[in-house]
Amino acid sequence: MSLGLTRREFLQGAGAAGALTLAPGVFLYAKDPEAPVTDAVRWGLLVDTRLCQEDCNACVDACNEEHNLQDLGRPETDAQWIRKLTVRDPLGGRTISLPMMCQHCENPPCVDVCPTGASFRREDGIVLVDKHTCIGCRYCMMACPYKARSFIHENLTEQLPDAPRGKGCVESCTLCVHKVDAGENTTACAEACHKDGHQAILFGDLNDPDSEISKRIREFGATQIRADLGLNTGVRYQNL
Amino acid sequence: MSIASTRYATLDAGRNYWGLLAVLAGVVLAGFAGFLHLEHEGHWITGMNNQVVWGIPHVFAVFLIVAASGALNVASIASVFGQVAYKPLARLSGLLAAALLSGGLAILVLDLGRPDRLIVAMTYYNFKSIFAWNIFLYTGLLAVIAVYLFVLFQPALARWTRAAGIMALLWRLILTTGTGAIFGFLVARQGYDAAIMAPLFIIMSFSFGTAVFLLVLAAACRGSGRVLGDALLFRLKNLLAVFVSAVLYFVLAYHLTNLYATEHHGFEAFILNFESLYSKLFWLGQVGLGSLLPLALFYSPKTRNCRVSTLVGASLVIIGGLIQMYVIIIGGQAYPLVLFPGMEESSSFYDGVVASYVPSFWEFLLGITGVGIGLILTVAGLGALDILPEDLSDPKPAS
Image 1 (cartoon, rainbow over the protein chains, first blue to last red):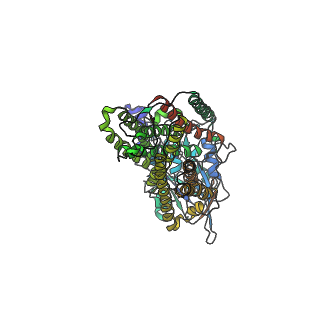
Image 2 (image 1 turned 180 degrees about the vertical axis):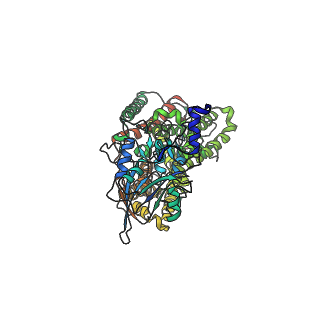
Image 3 (image 1 turned 120 degrees about the vertical axis):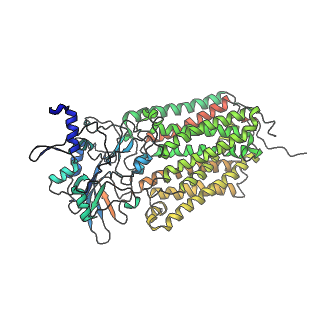
């Protein structure tokens, strides 16, 4: 490395610059794994319900594959990090379909009630469960307004390194934090929706006014589910 | 019988005593074996699921914790409010409270997804969580009761009795407030999110705790050949009747408030319309069997001076209390979360439908274990310490 920079210093500098252009159209998002997460960004999702197809389950399938959430044949206890929700207006019968997952609240009730602090919110807005300090009391599941969390009711095998999971702990959507931390800046659900051509789920930085997600929210508006609770969710919906 | 002359004695450790201890030890051991099985297999062998996350173990645990707080009624009335008639029973009041609390806490710990991480629960605290506060409140009450009993057992410390009693009274009121707040603080659930949960739980504790105390006292006296005078028994019964009425009043206030707000009509219909299981349990179990029938037994001219009716009434209060806990804890979860008010919701995760919950044998075993722990500690305490007065017969009229 020229200029006497170590590899880490070089990558830190590149990370600070955002991205390093290796070739036209090819970027290396360098990120120091030890660099602290900051609130300079707030990761979130924007869901356009007009583009979400009721018969499509691509986001759910992708999430299950990404985190190896297995169908154990017990739907009442099987974990679901994301689910397709059908909402029907009894007046007129308008029906919409949308993905429901952890809403990554700024003021998450699950974090408030967790006795050990295992439920926590990162500075960048991602709400997670620390699997080392979760005692499996399930109070967070009682508190979550979105029923976004699952308890692991049995022994699991073949967990993936990026998705540590185990019996007796509570878990939920991580906003694909392993992808975010690797600089991929996307989620399995958003990727799958994009690949299927629906583009109903958009991942991005809510703090960056120039991000696509911020532009769309600014232009078309977006709604929080249970906005009355004042949680300032990181997942927003259009055309509810 | 004057206070100064009150003599206490341990229970005679005869065959019946050891037999009872052995039965209770068997219950606790069976429960522990069940816990090991649950710990090995995971919670899928229970009826609890991702919709109803707290089940029968929590019904028993919360009942025992609430009853523990109420079992201290007699101690508070004796030591804080100076009612002489109850002073001989203050020791039993403290012992029973500590024993019931231990049983309830044991259930909560054994039901954890990771009970092996108890040390984590005791070393990592999020003080915004009422659960974290409760860990201090529960263990703290055990310490406060220990101090209270120590003071009662030391004649030289008699002048501190009132101070220790006040400490125990305040602590248990805060504790039961904290227990009710576990539900009251749940902002998103239609059946909870109500400030009245805290005082409701306090008055429930008065009722359930007095009922348990009355039965344990009667059983201990009968088992040890002591005479329990009518005056004392019926005085406790009259107190219990007031508490049962007060619980009904708080339940009425809770539902009337909900009924006034249209947004709660769905949940109120779920509990009140006599169609769901929870509604039937509410009307027949909580209100009928657990409240109105005991009140009739306690107040009816034909039965109000009947010892058997008093004991049956207290037993019904306990059964009704467990049913009330079931309606609050399970019913509150079974009613679907409302994500989109006014809309119909459906999903593969049981949105928009009443969640199913069928408790399993293992859950009941865990709940019974907590009861067993509470009783075995009580019986062991009565056998080891001078808790029970030798004479609880009615005072003789002055000649």
